[in-house]
Structures are given as C-alpha cells and as structure tokens.
Amino acid sequence: MSTGIPVRFLPMGETAWLVETDDIDAVLALDSALAPLARAGEGVWADVDDLVPAARTLLVVARPRTNLADLATEIRSAAARASRSATRSEAAVIEVPVRYDGPDLEDVAAQTGLSVAEVVDAHTGTPWRVGFGGFAPGFAYLVGGDPRLEVSRRAEPRTRVPVGAVALAGTFSGIYPRESPGGWQLIGSTEVVLWDSDRDPPALLVPGTTVRFTRAGS
Image (cartoon, rainbow, N blue to C red; front, top):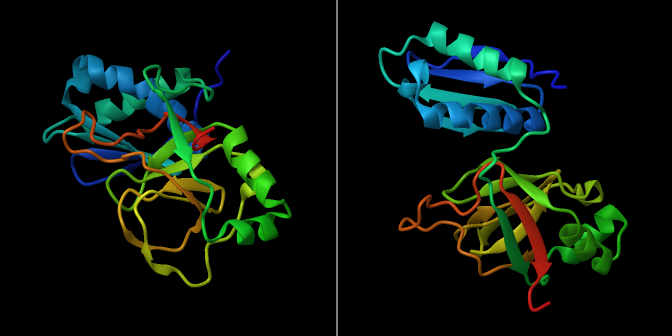
C-alpha cells in the first residue's frame, strides 16, 4: 500500500513549479508518477513541457498561461498516490564496462578502508541509478551504490579530467562526458558515449535508469 510522497511547492516564475521532496528516492518516485501523465497530455498536463529531477526537487515546466494552481493540484494528487519504490517503467538497464585504472583508486581504498580489489568489487557489485543530470550535457549523478564507497572530493580539483573518467564523490558515482575540470576521485575509465546529439534522447543516462558497472574485458 502506497504511503504517498510529501511535496512542497515553490513557484519558478510564471510557468513552472519547483516541487521539493525529502530525498532522491522520493524525487525519482515522483518523476515516475508524473512522467506518464505528461506523456498522455490530458487536461492541464497538455501544457507540461519538461520534468527535471535534482537531488531533492523536481522542476515541472509548463507553457505560458498554464493554470499553475490546477497543475499543483494534479501534482499533489499524483504524489499522494505514488510509491517511493517506483521508477519510470521504460527506464533501461545500461551496462558500462570500466577499466579500473584511475589515479585515485588507491586513495579511495585508503579512505574507505577497503583494498583496491574490494573497491572494484563494491563499485561493480551493486547497481546504481541515475538520480539527476549534472554540470555538463550527459553527466549524471548516480545514486544507490554500495554505501562503503562514500568518499570526499579531492582537496585540489584537477584542471583537466579526461572524457570517460569514472569517479566517486560523496555518495555519488559519475562519468565525465567530456574533458573538463573536476574534483571527483577518479577510479577508472570507460569508452561509453554519454552524449550524442544524433541520438534520441541525446543523453545515454536518463533519470531512473539502472547502471551496472562491469570490469572491461570480463
């Protein structure tokens, strides 16, 4: 039996609601509940253009002249019916082969009290979920991994992190979709293409997707 998802509303201009929830699990469940309504496009949902998850919020973007009060009523009703265990039904399972050769792998082992082999086993042994997008097109914050892998960011960020770097920071894992500065702990690398403008959708990792890391060549 669903207990629903508590929500709080903040107006974002005249065309959007920022819906606050308790945590990323609630965000993903709410996103799962609202996505079919937005796709069906009935009633006030015909004016909803986008759903944008974040760590504790879901941005619901509508068109000008949308009745935001009616939209809030619909969102609140859907949240009350939602299950926290839900994810988007069409979400894929993506396998990401990784070469665990990152320059921070030994530092991560030291921080966690695990051996290097145990870090790799922990990273590959528990499926991750895409929580929300990040600083660059294609970057996704991955949540729900092995809790032993919680680590701090680097004290001194790198000015250049290579494309495909697989990293950890806090409770998150992530993959750099392009070369950029970054302060996450680099544990490996992958050749998976995270952003392709010719792909629909361009981002490989969309919210709710399950990500399974594997050892490259295994």
